[in-house]
Every structure is written in structure tokens, then in C-alpha cells.
Length: 112
Length: 116
Image (tube, rainbow over all chains, first blue to last red; front, side):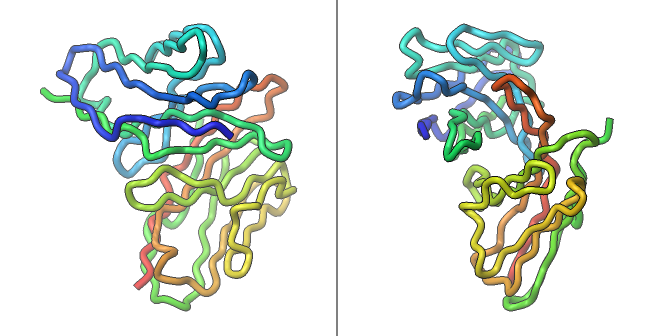
């Protein structure tokens, strides 16, 4: 299963775009990139996922490089409520079952 | 729609005592997961159920941990006896069956276990 590398922490000004990078250089062709976030004292929450193409939903955009070795999660207009730990996950298949392997994530702090 | 329900939210026990956590997944979700999250780390999968069947328990420490999902709905995770290193947040998640490879997991708030 591919592993991910993320910066441990980032700051972002409220109202600005937050760009969270993730490196997954060992990703396989059939593995998806998922992003979750975890607000303090809550369980992780799904944000977005993708395979090859860029994706956008009401929460965020996901930009995946052409070689798929890295991706960037973009929160277009960060608010204080976006302060959380963001996890980039490559969803692999181990022994026939899909498995999430969480790293330590990026702690995003949105500043007023 | 109600989310994943877990209880208790907090539990403090002394080492060597038993402890149990309960999870009620989202209605209709056939897949249930138990994760353990140590302080400052991401969640680690302990066990995954498809209906009543445990399809991946490779990371479950079977000498002291056990889990069950009778009737394919609620699930219980037990530790007996607890050790100091078991202090962590225990998360339950569920997901619906999807024929495609898309898999969104819905997490509960977790149970924070402190072993003294």
C-alpha cells in the first residue's frame, strides 16, 4: 500500500485559499487519493477523492499531478471552522480488502 | 439522518480491567470499521466487518482484543485486560455497499479511553 507524506502544519489567513500538499510517489495505477479532515474531538470527515482527474465539490478541489505522485487539496476561501487536521490517504487493496492508511496529517490553522 | 453513534464517549479504567465500546452504524451500512487513534497520530484500522463477517482483522491484537457484530448491525469492541498502552481514542466508522470502487467512510465521534 502506498504511503503519503504531508507537512505537519500550515497556517492560512481567513478568506484566503488554503493549499495542502501531499506526496504519494509510490501510488499504484488503481489506487485512489482520498482526503479527510478531523476537527478537534470529532471523527474524521470525508472531503473529496480522485483517481486521475482533478475533482471539485462544494467543500474543496483536488488537483492530482499527471504522474499521480502528488496532489493538492484546495480550500478556496478558508474560514475559522476549517481549522483541523487534514489527512491525505491512498486507498489501497490489501488481501482483497480496501484499506485506508492514515498518516499523521497536516494541522491547518486558519487565522483571523 | 443519524450518524454513527458510539458509547461511551469517555472511559477511565485501571490497568488489567476489562472495557467495552459500543457502536451503532448508519442504518443500511453493511461495512463497519473499528480504528484506534493514538495521540498525534492518524487512525489505524483494527478490524473491518462486512455484515456479520470480520473480513480484515489482521491488525487486531487478538490476545486481549475481541470484537463482534451480531446480526450485522451494532458492534462491540472489547479489551481484556487493558494495558497502559491501550489509552487512545477508539473510532467506529461505517460505509454502504457500493459496486464502484468509491468508498466514503462515516466516522463516529469516538470513545476516549484512559488506562491508569
